[in-house]
Length: 569
Image (cartoon, rainbow, N blue to C red):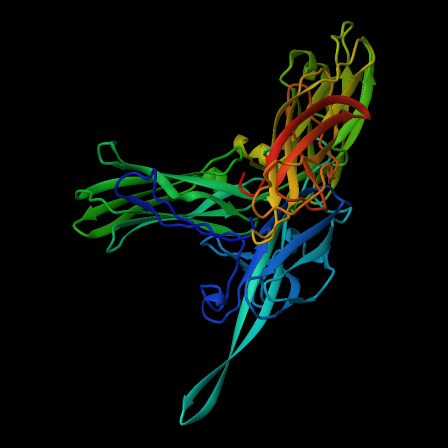
């Protein structure tokens, strides 16, 4: 942790192919490719390099970033918040006056820095704190901003050529910490909502090194997408002659931006006609695809026909629905009916016809209840930026099995301005509400199994103390939902031989990690994830761990063990 390292590997690539796209991440350097420590005595490291956050409307998050001065000179920094621009090669940079950004995807106005000017002592570090406040009116989607650190370093060099001469040089260094803020609905997260990408360009070109295949994935949705590309080339007989990754790794594309997926084929193809298919899976309900037909004659490559995306997919105008209540809670009993009313909002400039569908969100047989839920009207037409009310009725049978019941009602857009929406895109544009139905009969079972604990120690590698973060995974094995609280207590154990570089501590010193945000509901049979953090630091070493998971104050899981915590382990 703390240092930015770029690596590139060709392992696993088919013979004759190279993935030439290296997706940039969060460290931005301008003016010099190398850190000025190489030539000017200025060196900075930053931890973490980015923040990936999932927050609710109206919530607040405290951010802490650590900068460390690796040089022997004092560094003066200016800190500010800017918009985020993603280049087509996958790198990020701060937005400038020449950039026009969609305000619907920016969270610059949500961030407040505690300090605008910083001074880093030689070989010293400093914590930079910021507060991010999500407005109560924020809509679900992905928002970005960048905390930028800028310094001007001055070096004096003296050259003696008959008389002393002084040369002053200025070097501007920018480091950017990118904030990825996903505003989510309350309750169970919607896996597919808002993810929509299309391939807007796909071409093949002959170069001195070989054939260059390039596909550009455009994010037209409201959430971040991470695409993984594949290239398939067939000859005139339909035989596959190339099958390889398209691009290197998984590329992250911000809403409103595009990313190039490039592969260079260095092998030899005989003269003839070929068809190239680009497939990019970005984690949504739809895979982006494009096709081009090209001819090879010696070293010449000519494209004959290009089909960019399925016409029915690319022509769809993105629309997004939202509901007034993401969770509807109520009690049910055998033979009784229960009704709910929810408002469905069309957040677009197009007229949308949507239908409501009741589905079972749980895998357990006892939790399924969608066949007893009706939506009326089944279809509604919603004018641009208007709302329609929909009634959801639960008709309980005379006999109800034990355990609480759960039903998700999806509102799927069937048409936009009279044009049908392909089925694979309806869920990407739709919205849903979750019915949480408490069964007044029978016994409620609160149980959970621990699936794993992972620790991340954050902080500059030069320091001997770290800020711990733990990721706890568990499975709900009961018959009712969990919205758990969780704590982890670490108590230092005195070792016979202290680790090299460890700070001397008294046996029994402790630190507690707590949840930073309210967890989602975890339905029966589902796996949940909890992220725990501490504002305090700890030293590498041996600790006893006590983990407690509770639901509404009732303890449902406890684990105790001894472990060693150290960077990289």
